[in-house]
Length: 103
Image (cartoon, rainbow, N blue to C red; front, side):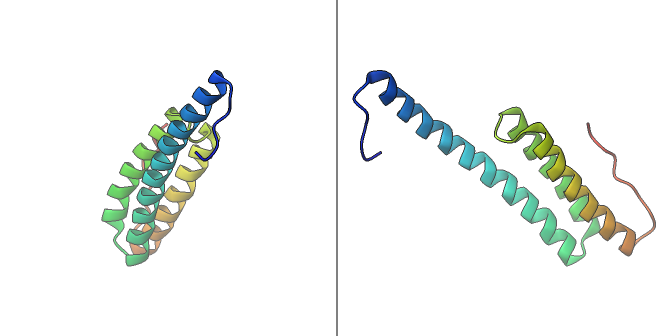
């Protein structure tokens, strides 16, 4: 915050925007970290670990959507893309198994 506005309501708005921005950045970082861990497990060939990490990633994505960090459709798209990667890897490594979809 270099320059603050003169109007009191605007000053409060700038401060609350900074707080909200910090919360959103932290939430998005948590989601990206969860997605990255799933992608790393898929790349390493760990199907069971990827499946377990996928559940944790779903949870963090759902929490971010509930906190209005992501739109619900964007959250669904992220979850779908992750499940697609994990399922594709599982098809290559073992017999056909489908993940239970949480709605």
